[in-house]
Amino acid sequence: MFILPLLPDAPALPRLAQARLLASLADTPVVLIQGPRQCGKTTLARTVAGRAGYAYITFDDDKQVQAARADPVGYVNQLPPRAVLDEIQRVPEIFTALKLAVDQDRQPGRFLLIGATDMLLLPKLADSLAGRIEVIRLHPLAQIELRKQDAFFLDLLFRAEFKPASFERMGVTLAELVVAGGFPAALTRQSTRRRDWYLAYAHALLQRDVRDLGPIAALDVMQRLLEAAADHTARLLSVSELANAVGLARPAVRAYLTLLERVFLVDILPPWHAGPNHRLVKTPKLHLGDTGLAAALLALDVPALHANRARLGQLLKTFVLQALRRQATAQADAIVFSHFRHRDGHEVGIVLEQGGLLAGIEVTASASVAADDLGGLRKLAELAGERFACGVVLYDGEASVRFGPRLFAMPVRALWADQPGASFAWRN
Image 1: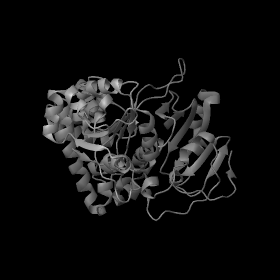
Image 2: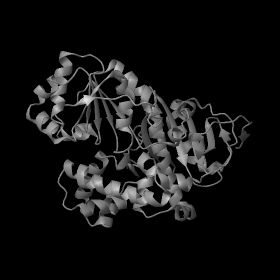
Image 3: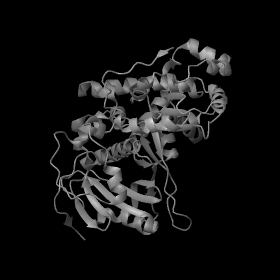
Image 4: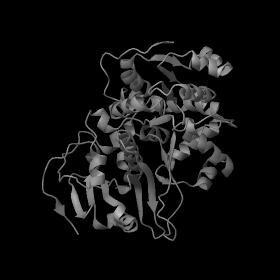
């Protein structure tokens, strides 16, 4: 145990979540930062909690694990007034002791927890700390963080206040951004070495974190399932297709997918529901947690992905989803993500709901957008009624185009780029 040191120069990488974490520590007794390994959780904790002199304990230390499991209440009672507990997923038994401590003293910011698995989905979790905990989910880094720019897209989206813009071409292609992914350690490597990092990363998670969560018949099966999931990213979840791809029974595939979801390797996007009698498809969508990992598993480099526009479009949908999830971390009000698919064929890849309002995002790797490409957004607007705030098609082009009230086509880089002023082009 030691006092968490203040970083001499607070890094910009976790900047979207810094304000959220500070606000949470100011009014909530227990705050949990969770997300995939190597996404910046401990860096965020050091950036924020280091200023307040928090003690730091990691359960990577087996002695700490044994002490916490042997006497959870006694262990928690001897902790300093403010403590960071890292690798908290290794001792779910401690949550009941944390609850008792918090109920005796509800001082805000007492415990800052860091977890590399989704703690609230753990079957061994003794207590959820409902009413005493706030969860901050981190994701792989978005371009807006890598470029150290302010988050604005989601605010403009729900107000339908996008400024007209003509965007200059980027110095890199969308294929390069997709293949690079969002993990800091991978991004420091040369592009030819990133695939090795991602494959080693996945192997390490399967060997340790996934194995710790539950019994697995064979780890090579989990590897094949992860590769099959990468092949199906941004598509409707078909347990039967995955089962056929890896040679497993469907119940086993469902169980293994749950394990992959708990360590954030896959991201299950639920369907949007508008109520009965709307003929909506109720199947969730499957996404990989990061496109760099997906490209590595599929052995796709930049030239191969750039040449395969269909595959680029598929991975681009996952790239945009993860970018939006990361930006949502900075929002004061929670955003609920889902997807929309009607039985008549209309669909919207990403649906966002906040404060009673709803917005839709469709994604394409095409360099142009036609009126027909907004059919899914128009159908969603029809069903959502007054709740519909805005719909956007993100594409690989340069101009912002308005297709009608609250409907826009915008370049993918509008997610992170400043928007220069111009006159909107109107299309019917």
